[in-house]
Length: 430
View 1 (cartoon, rainbow, N blue to C red):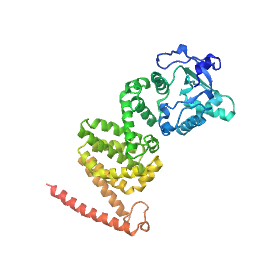
View 2: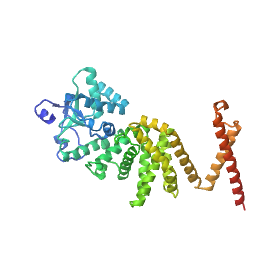
View 3: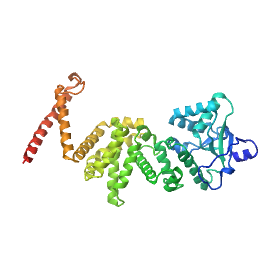
View 4: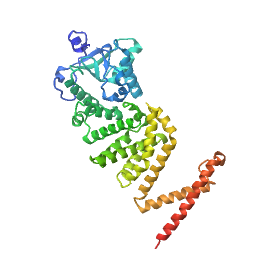
């Protein structure tokens, strides 16, 4: 294992003359004792514990092992691809800036060459070295710490958080990466600090930290629910469903107690949430619309007396859907999408129940809203009638005989139901 400090003492690595400023107080080091060095890239390797690339690295599980280029060049190449795929445009801007003006912001490196801050700059410099064939240097602060020492891991994490979230823009973190990093750092199998410690160094509020932590908990439960590998976080990234987990985590935490009965209801409601998210994936509902739907579900169903009825109504659909997806052994979002298409009937039945309950719940808010919803339905039916029984640009040569019979059946049901409702409202008139 290389010791950069030893190489510096032997005069094999030179300083730039710049004096770094520690973003936080860390036992064992001070700004006065630290220097910025010009470190040859061959002595450096990416940090597999970096929070910004948590989920990308997790995809490889135990298959990935930190190494210098002369030991195993595939390691650095693999991490470089993760970084490039995450924010290719940002990497291009950084590389162009360095090519034109040199490295303007120094990185932070451990004694053994592990880069704990400056991944994008390190990647850009590696690209420039490949492109030019010249020996390129990474200007970085050299820290006398090592991941081999468990007590020093906490100090390293403190510095990483302070540098990447306290000094730099927090938006540099993908929200899923941030959530999983919070979970793994403060909970999970090997926590190294508390949520309060994480908040102190990252400058995140306690409430926001808890929200991200709970979101990560339900992301992991969702992956288990669909039978995907536990590190398949890219399913959530690519489907753009993170905010749904963030919202559901907060609602489930606030609405259910710790007793056994409450936990059973909480688990049933969690599965209903998963059904909604899978339905959204299938029909293509994303962004603010998807988040608002999940929020409305919490507001109108979960927090109301209707929650148990809804859970009971959809439980079979959700269980069957979970079993079917698990049997397919999906590993990524593309495979999940294909399996959802294969189970279109189940998704459709769930969606119909969800839509019916949400309409009923929202209509129950006030008489005016209820009347407006009926008015909107009547307006829609009239529009269809004015368009010769179809909608939009549809023509009868596009409709099969079986579909026409299905439409007849629905219209018959509509006519009978409308007659019953008309008589019911009449009997209520005083």
